[in-house]
Amino acid sequence: SLLLEVKDLTAVIAETKQEILKGVNLVVYEGEVHAIMGKNGSGKSTFAKVLVGHPDYEVTGGSIVFKGSDLLEMEPEERSLAGLFMSFQSPVEIPGVSNIDFLNMAYNARRRKLGLAELGPIEFYAYIFPKLDLVNMKTDFLNRNVNEGFSGGERKRNEILQLAVLGAEMAILDEIDSGLDVDALRDVAKAVNGLLTPNNSVLMITHYLRLLEFIKPSRIHVMEDGKIVKTGDISIAKLLEEEGYKAISTS
Ligand code: ADP
Ligand code: MG
Ligand code: MG
View 1 (cartoon, rainbow, N blue to C red):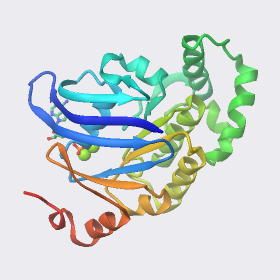
View 2 (cartoon, protein in one colour):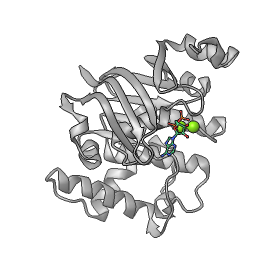
View 3 (spheres, rainbow, N blue to C red):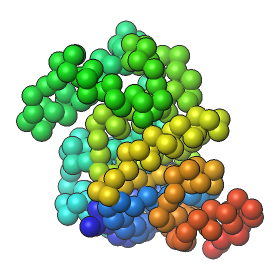
View 4 (cartoon, helix red, strand yellow):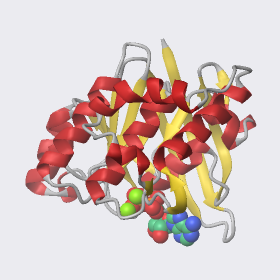
């Protein structure tokens, strides 16, 4: 069934009122993978951040319905509890806090909000242990401080681990492939594929066909100047790879 419906969405930068999103339309059903491509500065990250309710932006028009609810009426935290997840493009280092403690806290915060009992360290370990395989991580990774000295690939895999721990009906992955070598990319893609079910969906932002060959999208959209100007199948990504954005530009 219908998961996300975005209609004529416009948004400005809160501080300057500069309009960045100029009428975005997008419909995502359960079980689908959507990809958004587009030149640097076309508004892809802004769109992702507006979906999760980032305070840097103000919605000035249009609507976003997620699982039948008006997303624009919800605080960022409520959106996350409702099942919307976004990977952070540059996750912070947290000195002195181990990765497993951090994930345990994040998971317990969610459980409290949902009225569920918290998991203690031993129960949480049992919960997370099987998920390590999915992201091809060794257990010692859990004892390292959050993001401290993580390689690019480890950071990305940690984001997917977060997604696996928290669960989400819609995961927004913004340039999850940036800075990854082909092996790390394959790992990350395999993990994302492992989390896909008929009931959830992924919205990924990428510049590269490479990622889309590993995580097969149902639809590819091209964003230009704050709007989705073209939607289609993998052939769009192939055209972009061969000829660049001028091949589809409307301006
Ligand atoms: P993309 O992800 O497609 O590269 P962005 O959504 O990051 O594009 O940015 C779209 C445009 O909006 C860019 O010109 C960018 O500089 C500008 N922009 C986005 N967010 C901000 C912000 N918080 N402050 C100032 N300019 C911003
Ligand atoms: Mg960019
Ligand atoms: Mg971006």
